[in-house]
Length: 269
Ligand code: 13P
Ligand code: ZN
Image 1 (cartoon, rainbow, N blue to C red):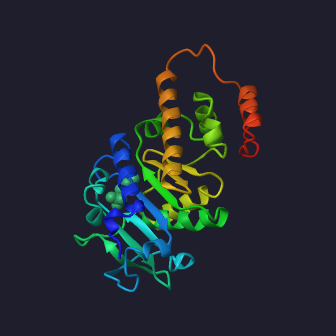
Image 2: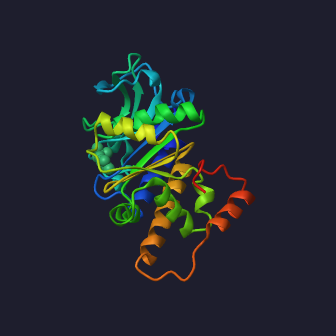
Image 3: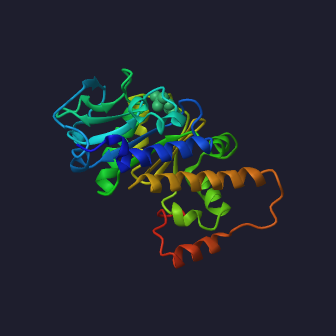
């Protein structure tokens, strides 16, 4: 067996969470991350017949039966993940009946998956239906996206349009736009189902007055998506209270869409 602490996916997971922390997206235990792993890859590092313990959950996870995920632990700090992944994250396999997670590695202080596990798993279910290469669900609390949800209309098209106008290449990174959930209690199945529904039509779902969800086919892609939305939100907040002398016009956005051959969200441009 190879040493799992040297597995590229464990190292990459540590690097991404450290960067998220460094950028201020994940104060204290804020944010959570899940990565769908390939069984064959994991089997080089772990005996897949050895289950440390079972961790029940309360949603229907049958569609993910047998799937293996690396997931941040509840209450754990992103800034500590790289130094001690075995304590701050876990590798879990969804049981055959989809009612519990089999812990294969990690959570070695008795911990368990993030409280947002329902949102993550429901999001994985929906995104895998749309994109077989999908692998990552990222949740975090970036300052500017969060701040924008207090002062900007939460109409999804209006919010997206503002973000597209802030950087020429915003629309290139998220032509599918940004969907938004109004404030809801977090950590339960209800917000999980609502988030997964929103992620059917966009790869970003903003949780008003809370944070954001971004998805992707790898950690880099999900990170880059959240990073771009966050930067656009930052530019918006810098200029929101100033008189605008010019902006990127709708016609100019159409030119970007044409030249990059983008599949822009239907009816939004
Ligand atoms: P966890 O510590 O359970 O991951 O919760 C953090 C969070 O961001 C909840 O939305
Ligand atoms: Zn959160």
